[in-house]
Length: 567
Image (tube, rainbow, N blue to C red):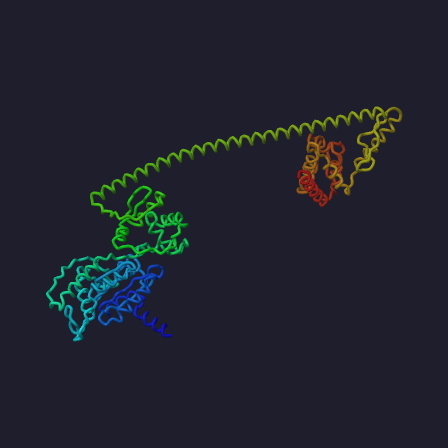
């Protein structure tokens, strides 16, 4: 419990500040306020914080010193941290009466001690004399000697800077060398004591101050290497310190080459302040290692990288001098010429592309025309082949009919002018007229007249059979032609029963002889619906008692048969 109490007491001497307003109030309320600007991700900050807490506790317990310690983190300040011109972590700034009088960058605790001593942060109680006591209380020899060293060691100080407010930016820090006039003081009681003070001062001034070389490393690069790439903090810091150009790429390359070194995980030693400053000059610009171009800002660096594809950059101490008006005008004229050249090149390229597109369009047009002609040629070939096949089929049909006729002639000749019986849709229905040759010619004539009379009979019940028989003629489309002309004969009478010209069919016409008469069942269909031959036998006349409903039904059947025939 006692240890925990002492720890809490020690920590309370380092005041935590959580905003920019808290920093200003802290500097206002305390005459001598030392503020540590730190970062939670900073390794040197974490390593030096215990020592800073001990220093704060020491000065808190020292009644002769009047200095208060505070700490604030960069994530608490946000953009306001730029008001304090913090370039590295940790940075220690001493405010006296709200003005900056000293600054130490990096975890340099000895530098903080020197800054506090040089800025006269002693507690004044009722007056003070050089080497004397204050407030009537006599000082020991060591205390008086320490105060004299503090006063005599202040050879140079920083010009005071007021604590920045949100409404104004802090003025640039200017260093001013002040001449310190040494006033005569009371003669020391012992000359040896004065000689000892001088010797000690010279000894302290001759010691080289050591600083942390990682204090000025880029926080964003460290964050990239540790959080995004997963490197330990010590390796990330070594890579940035020893890599080529102090870039992330250079650090990664160095770590890949030295990852197996025996001392890769050893702590980074402190360096002398002069050596660190020599190796850590302030970067004024950026340099492209691929082409050697100097770039003034990160925006110009990104633009250059996007335009050229270069990726190897490093910080440079070379300062880019602003252009004069004449140089700006010349540069602008050069840019205009370059833009005009680029525009002319683009226009020429567009013309060439337009020519290529036109050539391609013409070529495609010719190819399409050639393909269309080829398709039309193939279509004509198919049509010619179809006509040839139809003619061949018609020729075969004619040859078949001639063969049938020759067969009938031969059969008649062998059977004395008669044909063998055949069974048709009407029962016994010879395919031709039977003639008797020789004796009994008169009887044969009577039989022929009787057969003709019998043949003229047709039945309404067989209309479907007649249509089916006609539809069976497929050669040359003859059956379809017959159905079409029968549909005209029957349709005219069914649709216009009052017109007499449709009630008579000329059997001597070319259409009737070619498309109706040769087909079995065609004439019987006309007889079945109400047509009868006239006395001269040259026409078929519609009977007076013909059924209009029968004509309409037959028309519908013919239409259906004709459609089915052509499908």
